[in-house]
Image (cartoon, rainbow, N blue to C red; front, top):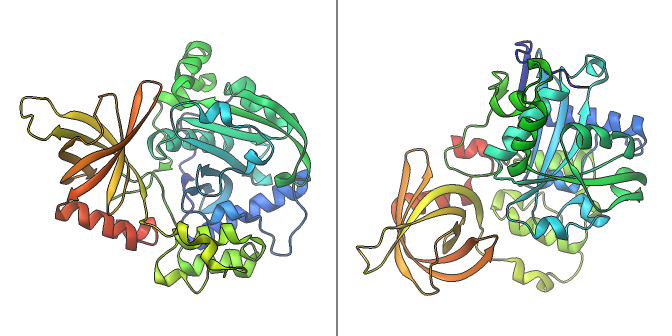
Length: 395
């Protein structure tokens, strides 16, 4: 099954689907593939669009050949809606481990390219692998696939099955049977090396996934070290989820309220679905926005100049505080100065105190409350609050 071309045709481009035309083409290919496989009923729009596609924590990747979208795959970050597969599979064993989780979903290749070996499939999967590790701050992948397709993931990529690994009916796939599985990306590299490391180049998935730098991949540009690439403007959100497919119409009030808490800029108000019940039931959802990020930092303890600063990895930032991980013990109430690299060439210095901590696998996760900030921090949070899409931030 393995045939990985280390030098694909230069007409092949792999990128984040960011324009309305690219997203429309991805949803169209996905619709046709799912209808043909029996995973959904044909829709008048000719598109497969789900509530998860509306979230800024979901990224759709696309493969384009000579300017035409010919393949797609969707990566769903663990967010306010959870995962599609958690409705039927138990993820508690994965959630108990250290690291972020993402569900790999909506894989489809245009029929014109399905009989050409892995000319689209393998580059698309390599892009997904690198994007998850380097751009999406993801450690664990989870999937729900039809039983006749689990071999690709289990035998080639070393996914292992979840508890109660198979269900007879999965509503997200039109009642088709499904198998759930997971892959720890922190362990995958060693497995790839052990199994594929000495194989010929075109069959060496270790070299292909880990070492090879595929020139066809266009990674997203980022001003800050954010870990998501939102692409939906208010106009795009309205186009796909209100007009083309009436996704918002079918949401319950909790999910509607969650969308309002995420898309809190005034420009989105006219396209988000109104609550059908009492909005006071969801007032607790209104809070400072927290933005996922992954950047290096250090914490110098106040009044201890002889103590080396503790290294941190900042994971979320907001107007009032941030979350970070560290291997260093920092007592609750500790005050200090934080030096943080928010982006390439964007350095900030803030004063903060430790307000909470929990530990997982020798890694400590701290919550910090800010007491003072500098212009770089203030500007970054303001940019993230007002930037509707990744393109806005880049501009």
